Length: 477
Image (cartoon, rainbow, N blue to C red; front, side):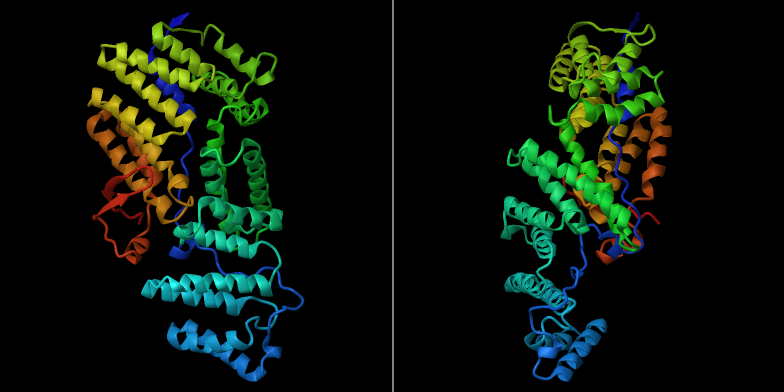
């Protein structure tokens, strides 16, 4: 029987910290924003559109000529001239050749461009009128409902409630099933977790959609063709991580889920007491009991002489609650132990353990940062809390953006700030801090992406989302 030292468990909990989402380095801005900006791609063509085509125009040759002209002027960025020709085509042959929605989707592009130049909100009405026209001319599938929801979520949030946008995404998924468009999945997943957290989506509905989201992503990855596979990879980087929110909901997943996900990790390292303790906690949280293969195997390791631990007082109760998967209880008693503790060293270790419970198990990043900072304040020469805060920032790509692209990349700036601070205050933390800096610096925005936003390296930049910190602009190259 060996005595427990809080630092032992603090370090052990780091084994299964949430894997940070690595915002990939896009070749160009369009690729970086692929998870946000969906192209105007027509749904599967009909045999014949019910709307007017070139063949229905009063002068077919003139309509086709005007179509070619406006498309050519678009390519040369002569937008006003292009728009004049587009209006003529739209008036006589909105369905073009009856096989594609190009005229209508180009109209949406025109109005989005004019909106960006003038700020005139009337253009938004025109955009949604064209979406309705696409739905009339090409009524197959959930493309239009998905596009409307996408634009409302990312561009025009004041025009609809979260529930209304969610309902549009539901309509799109209901119509397209496994063939749901990739641009639907990320915002729908975000809304699913937000509405569930607000008690507006039930556990049963969330479970069903979680399973469907995973199935849609698997189908998309399996059946995609380049370059569109990159878009599915972006979705796959984001949605499954966002769905991990449901692991914080007691009773949402059963023992089978936690066994399937975490027991293989234990089997790969069955001699690690730290890992066994962490996984045993998750199995308990999932409702596993004696008689379950995974539960019994992990418990046997913890009960062995090598891993058996003794605890005292509130700290002991807190650690016992942690192992049993009762995270609120663990936090309560660990904080009580910290309040009672007079020695800064032990108090700081208890607070850092509370931080890791919030980070790993509760997915509550602001609370985790608060207690990590309190631990650092008690020991100004301790770098470990700043290492942890940096990892929180680095893993926030799927929380603060679509998983890739600008919003998901800039979190690395804040992470590097923390890792640099860890090096400054604690020489022993330098090696680990440098490891994280090397790993994540490549995922910062590229110089071209910074330039396109009229920003400069070295300038100050405020990161929103839950991070809400000012940092310094840096480039990956």
